[in-house]
Length: 71
Image (cartoon, rainbow, N blue to C red; front, side):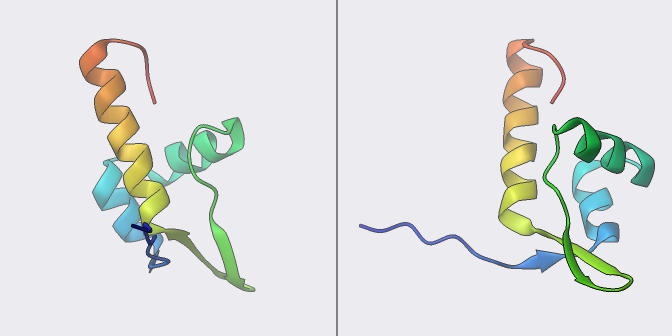
């Protein structure tokens, strides 16, 4: 059985709401390579793949529960 991954795009306010991170913290983590990078949609428009953000959240929960450090 094949798994399908949704390519739903979400904007920054949704990413902030889902992760409880500030804008500056999201961009710091992208720069550090610890958060999914945004996709450029236009000159002043970016979005994130929802499934990548959800995967990051799942890893953060697991790491937080096992005490293995920050996401």
